Structures are given as C-alpha cells and as structure tokens.
Image 1 (cartoon, one colour):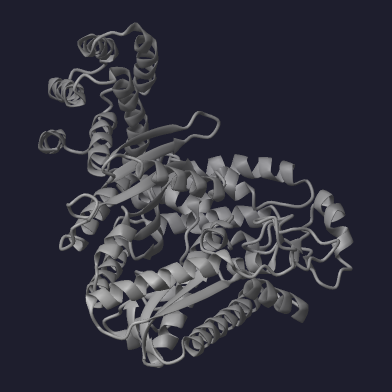
Image 2 (image 1 turned 90 degrees about the horizontal axis):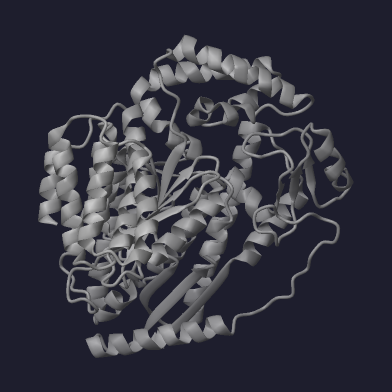
Length: 621
C-alpha cells in the first residue's frame, strides 16, 4: 500500500543558536542539513519517491557535503511498513553523525595535536544522540489524486504534531561536581580550558582529577581560556567547517570570523598580498610576546587588523603589560607596513536572517504531489542562488536552505546583496500565487549591523527579533534593520524591503559625498521628539526640516541638496500627512544606518552611489 511518510529531526534553533563563534554557528547549521540529507538518501535508496526535498539528480545531490541543503523535514511516498522506513532513516542519521564525530576528532588531533581520552569521545556521542529528536508520521495514500494527497498530508501533519506533544521525556542523569556548558548552560562539560592564568588555574584545579572531564592546561587554538564545553559544544567547535561555494568543497578553514567580515572593506582596499604581509608582521610581534606559534597563527585574517582582538591572543603571566607593549608596536608597524594614509578598519559588519512570508500557507495551497515537488525544486534553486549572491558580494552564507537565509555581510556591499536576494526570491517564486495576497510570494528579513566583538549569540537573537518584526508589517515583504552600537542605544527601522534598501542607499550616497555632517541625524531625531507633542501639521514639519538642512549645509552642491529636498518632499507626500514625527524619526535612523554603510564604502574605495539613479528609483517606487 502507498503511504505518505513525514520525517523530522530537531531541535533546530537551540542546537544552532548555542554558538560563540561563526564556526559553531555554521557547523551547527550545516550538520543538521547533512543529517536530514542522510535520512532522505536512505529513503531514496530504499525506493521512496521524495517530495521534500525533490532533487533532480538524487544520486549526486544527496551525497554527503553536496551543495544541496535540506530542511529538517523530509516528505516522501513509500510502500510497506512505515516503522521499517523510519528505522532505516534513523540508522542513516546515527551512522552519519558518528562518522562526522570521528572525522572531527581526527582533524583536531592531526592539526592541533589534541588527544582526548575515550571517555570524552563516549560522553560526546551520548550527548549528541540524546540531543537529537527524531519523529515521524505516516498516512495512507492509496490513490494518486489531489484529494487523496491533501487528505494524507493533512493527516500526517496532524499525527506528527500529536507525536511531538507526547514526546518522550527521559530523566536527565547529570554528573555531580562538573561545570555546565558555557554555551547552553545545561549539559555537563567534557573539556575545560585551564590556560596559564593563575586565576583560572585555581578555578579549574578541582576538575583535574575527575575521570570524566579533560582539562587542557594550555589554551589551544579555537578554544578560549576558562571555557567549559559539553560534548555537543566541543564537537561543533572542532568540527567547525562548512561548505565553501567558491571551491565547491567542505573545508575546515573556510569559515570567517565576524572580525574578518568587518575588516573585509579594508582588505579589499589594500589587496590580499598586502593583507598577508601585515598578518605575518602581527604574528611575528605576537611570537615576540611569547605567544605559541600555533596560537598566533590560529586566527583568521581579519583578526590581525584589530589591535584589541589581536592583543587578546596574549595570555599568561603579566599579560596586561605584554598586551600594552604589543599595542604600541602595532600602531608603529601599521604606519611602516600599510602606510600612514591607510585607515583603520570600520569595526562593524551585518548579519542577515530572512525567509519567505507565510510559506506554510503557500505549501498548503499546492494540492498535488507534483506541485509540491516543483515548489521544492524552486526553493532549492533559490537556496543555491542565495549562496552564490552572498559569495559574489564578498559575504559568507552560513545557511541557505529552502527559503531560509542566514548570512554574514560586509557593509560596503550589503545593499547590493539585499537587493539581489529580494530579486532572486521574486524570480524563483514568479510562477506561484500566494493564497494570502494573491500576488507573488515575498521575502522578509532582519538585518543587524553590529560591532565585531559583540557576542554572536546576542547579534543572532536581535536578528531573529528583527525578522519577526519585519513579518508583522501589513502585507509583509518587510525588512527591519537594526544598528547595535557598543555602549549606545540600538536603532531600528522597518519598511518594505525594496523601499528601505533604496532609502538607505540614498542617504549613503549623500553621506559618502560628505554632504551632511554626522550630527544631522541626531538633530532630526531631537526635532521629531520636540515637535511630536505640539500637534504641528506635516507642512510645519517640512518647514522645520528645511530650516535644519539650511543650518547644517556645509558644502555647496546644488544638485545634491536639490535631490535631498526632493526626497524629503516625496517622503512626506507618500506618508499622506500621517504620523510626521514618526516619519522624521525614521529618516533620522535611516541616516545613521547609511553613515555606517558610507564609512565602509569609503574604506573600500567604492564610488558613491549615483544620485540620478537614486532619484529614478525613488520615483519608480
């Protein structure tokens, strides 16, 4: 008998989000996709007809480390006892997981000479297998008709939800006396990093005699002094690799740090050869400060352009004095190697989280097995195109699967990336009509511009909140951009995706030309807050804005200032006289965001955006 089989693996967000580094985040995302792909491969090899995913070349696309990313749900048509199929899928997942763990630990031993006792391997395996939540459901699908398919799918989804709500709760067997994971705060650590610091030595001394924890006395690469990692954390860290869309290979050393992405505009300016010369100079200075060679060379390229980040590699006795000395020679070497006219890197980068609007409703609207397969292939094609777009504009695609996007973006090309992604999604979905809107399905997302030293977990949380806020926009197709400044207030704006990109591009075009001072956004913000309780009509706001512009005008560029006035008049007109204070505040925040983009573009020596093109796009919008 034909059966519709639905299989799922989790937990998704807790496993991915427990990340201190981009390596953790990228590997967590990549691994879950690979495990789901292993399940899909096992089902295909047993004769299942796959629907989600629906690879056109399954023998190639379902291979480990292929370019195909698979979501946590697999939908297929099978024949026979569903329990046997579920067992085959689970066995494939466990086999792939164990293979990846062995591969990761062998890599760590080969590259960093780490040797973990068998108890660490065993506890890591236990924690990983305990972490995974695998569920399945099945429903009869005797006839290949739209009605039968819709009924079977609805029943399978309903059954799966019931199964998840009645999931097994195993009693947790903790180990007294061990520290908890520094990332999730739940699982006991299998390894702690003692390091040379006296303070940390005293803290960790009591764990040295425990048979179920490994104490590393020297701070190794990719770990931090004082860190306590569970088996899950350790596996993600030592297995910290993902698929590289440039080489089309799975690589260990291809995952950038947030410092890399922030430094990229400067690296583009000076070239990779000069950047590597600078890296070698910094490594030489670190070695002079008694930093082990493996540790000095363990970091990614961008780290060496930020003095504080590079100084953090100096640990041990009298580290603060040694760090102070290092900072002094860092500044001297900068002028000698890179030149006095070479600017310091702008310490900000962007993290994007995005996905399609109400995709569940779109999936439900496709009533046949074949229509679902077509949609599945379109989403897979968009995921591949997304990764290519991000790489093209010098970003890093952490995860692109189906309609989901998670990527690191440098600020000098962030607007081009956002525009290209929006267009790519529209192109991929052009043959579909969304049941909620009657139009082409749209993309919404949250973009966070953050300092490269801001904890990654905080940035990711903010990005997901920004995405949720964008999806609250009526009609959706929203984009929320948040600026997280260190020690300052967060700035958040939301608008239609394409409109917000164009607005920020307009202000960046003016900002890069130096046509308004950095204080102007703050003046407009204060003006909005002052005028809001007065009940002043929109015409009054416009007059006040012109007055402020006139006061702040420092350079004579009639064309640019004419474009600025035209832009503001159009914004007030499009608002229809509603909430002028809110509009003015929105403009002030857009300016602040745009100045960050303009700064990065100046460092990368990118030409300012064309004001004529901007006016044409604004008019078309």
